[in-house]
Length: 290
Image (cartoon, rainbow, N blue to C red; front, side, top):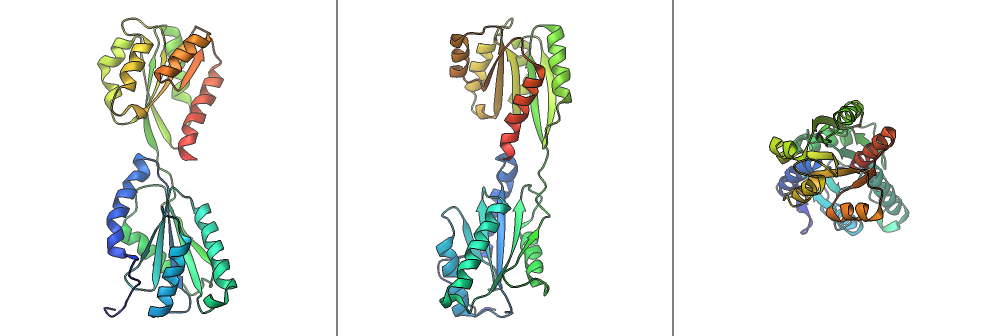
């Protein structure tokens, strides 16, 4: 295998692994979806330098600048990592390049088959990923120009979300706490805590954790009011982790504008329908998995 010559400007398997380790952790922290595509020349067990270079050049001309193309160490497989792309987009890409290869005369000596792996969790090891796809592509039953799938890493993990209710009315606080504890949001587990004033919330230090944090608070509170808390949270280095809903009895454009300019994500006028609140929260979290 040492005499195999590859295209000069394509990354090799060992060079890509360190990038993959970083991307793998981003799947959780940044909710980044990665789709890996692997291709193999059909009906060929030995590398062919000229044909392999043609395949490499063709793939380089078709991928986006955000995609990463590399060649596996055996010289007969190619991999492509599509960042922030689902298996649907990867399949569309493969169908498009397959159609071009089959239609153009200069590529008639090239025949490929492919496999796809959508990665939505970090329970994946680079070498294992490669081996599973190479095994899939080695199956004699897989036809030329076909697309197989490895589904071992497509299950989305459950993420813990901190939830803080800051409301001075004890009865309404209990109602909100009960409502949020009963909400079922796919891929998320809510850890709900309630506080009667802004000061007790800040003293808890619960807001300093690295988890995503939903804040549902009244604008008027004893000791530390909602706008003061809003100002503190939005000036923290990791302020983007906070999703802040502000409740208020003030139904005025000025009050809402002041809240939105301060950084709230939702301004909710009391009294409000609890089912509407549930719908807003579910919609907020659903957007993270689109």
